[in-house]
Image 1 (spheres, rainbow, N blue to C red):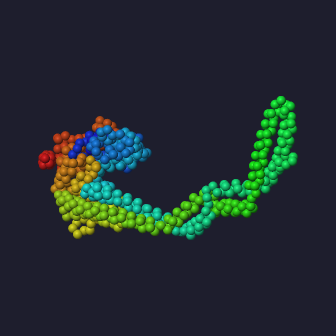
Image 2: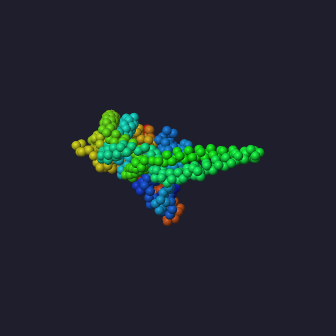
Image 3: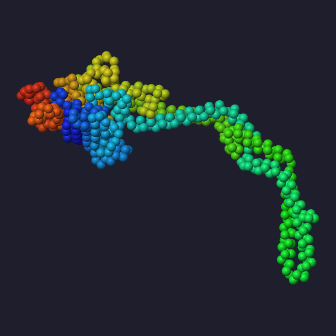
Length: 560
């Protein structure tokens, strides 16, 4: 609940620290005393519209702080946790409004966006006024209210899950069809390309080997000439071998007379002779290998040029041609198998649609049953509010699958008719100010257990009514206040008499201050005696009579 409200320099309120209690709290005062200022200030604290005009005259800024004592399981704490905001016990919302229109928002002294402040505030407080087009008057929220009333959270969760599966199945089928259509458009090209590449049959590393072979064959004649000359230099009458043999024969003749001094030389020449013979044999082998068929060169060049032409055609490297062929072959096979896959995805979509339709249908049935219960509950509440001739109807309209969504197949709207035989229509368009307030009250009593808000605020819910109707309004507010904190701005003594806490809102200045001192709004809690006097004033007007005081006593006593 809202346990305290602090206001600084907002319109006519210079300083206000207001402690609040559970149950029914009423705020009364003369017209123009500043009751609306209090609500505007509270609205600012929970993320309402900012306005530099709210700042008091002569001040640069104003501020509003709202303190809440809540159950640790309240959903507001989940929001704080998601946004890394510490919350040991309660929640403190604060908004600073500057004269230039800018604002700063705080939750538990941590700077936050106004959007987050509003989101948190919406879980804590509901403000209902005659001209408030949010909350119960906002048709977009009626389905959510009905689901909460009917305890349909589990059914709604199933619908959301099946909708997610349905959306996934639709996306898969659409993507496959798009890919299939694109592939089909390229089918002729793919067929030709695969046939061409299959005929070419490129192999990994083939370009490098062909290029090396081509280079060798192109230079083989020149290489062969050099090798032949080298071979001639080694052999023949004037070749190296002949000269070494000649040197060995002469050294052999002188060997015996040299006393071993030539042994090393002879051994070295002998080794050289053997290696020269090996070299000559290798040269002879090289000459044989360099002999080639000119057709081989043509064939290698033709193959190499064909590979490179294919690479240019398909804008890839020669090395990538085998991979390209595999990929195109797979795409072509995919087209051929596409119809089978399409059938599979269509079946999956049909299954998903069936699951969603079943879940949404069950949810819709639950909503229809909840709607009938809500209609009966509201009708019961309308009787003591002197709206027994009015009709309230929760309209549940089903839409087709193309217009369905994660919330199901239903549109929900709260409709009313204030006179027998008159057509049903939206709350805000059909009811007058006084009727609208009573309709909202009846709805709130019926929906009391569905909202996370622990504090309800009614702005002149008793407008335009009096007597027995005002008494009925007071009873319903008191009943509502048994489970929620209810703050009511009222002009009705019948409502004020039922309050657990009564605040008087007044406007004036300090009697000792100069006339130029600004007028300010004051909020005072009333004790039993001053409360009796205020209710008597509400009954009699400007002059409080003893009869009015006696009537006030009767009203107060009659509530207990």
